Length: 454
Image 1 (cartoon, rainbow, N blue to C red):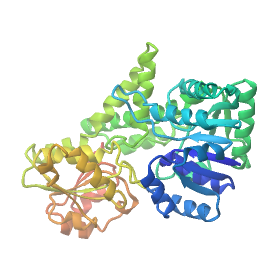
Image 2 (cartoon, helix red, strand yellow; image 1 turned 90 degrees about the horizontal axis):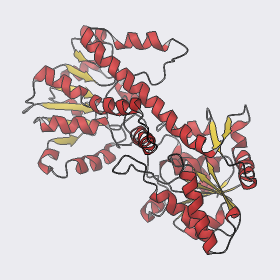
Image 3 (cartoon, one colour; image 1 turned 60 degrees about the horizontal axis):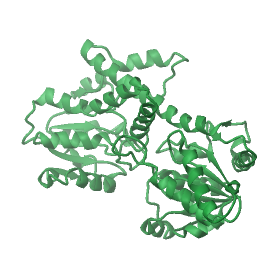
């Protein structure tokens, strides 16, 4: 099948590469010429395991192309995926300007029937806006609005495992209208996703608005579990309980399960923060408050300061002449995504208290440099207190303590003898509970986890 992907960012690239892998002829559009130049020269502008190899393989086979040509992109695909960014607006709502612009471009150039697929994470009612924008442009050209049909097909991709998630999905959600055009679109989507349903049917068909809400509901539920466990972990610290034992105790209940029950320094990234905020905003627009989600957001923001509070409790508020090694900058492992990363808050707070920070991340160093420059734009002197190390052990040299923020596998079993030799003091503040407190005590390491009673 001929498919166009509008937007060659995280979702667009993964969607385009994976659909090409299944034999489809995929045209990826982006209006950023630098991004297209990178892709056409064999590079990939984001880090995602397995994605670069898949792109190379399908470009070589002639099934995947990248361009800035809008007219060519509309002419190419019978199915047009809109996978552009929906950044949060100032009031927390999703900014749909890029989605609507993409829809208008389809309406301006379409000359044959098109199925338009909302792949971007969008609030309920977006399909109506997309339909209205396309219809307006088609009518200007005296073409029938029935030429195009809009479908909601939200993505459920975990950064760091997105290729695997797309190729072996646990569910595919497709929202269509019950009109004749909607039924034709449903059949087109059924054909497109047939290879992913060979073992068993994974597709859930529903109306468009239900599909739009499903995506937000899923992310809001997962964010809620994280904030709930962070609240319990903070309570465990106060009452002397061990949150790891609590996690095992409640996770073994089949009604609860173990997923997203790990306490830490709060969630970040491009999805949970903006999706929780956007869903809450949608509710307010309809005269209803989602009080649970407002609490989830509040808890998450506070949780990003938890490690700093533990450091303050140990060393005091004045951290001048102190140096901290920090392992992990990306908001989660297997990605270089620094959006809403807790590491940015922790670094800023340590610098504010006078400390020096030497940070390391296996993948996110270039993105981290850019993010830190933005964070310290109004305080260039503060940026001088932060440095990035090319080696995790080198970052420890002379540091008063190690602060762990991201749970990269490379951090799970370090050489603790070397670690203790490098550190000025054998102290670890572990924001991801990578180590057992009892084991650390045996090694002579002062250990501060999240809700881990020692």
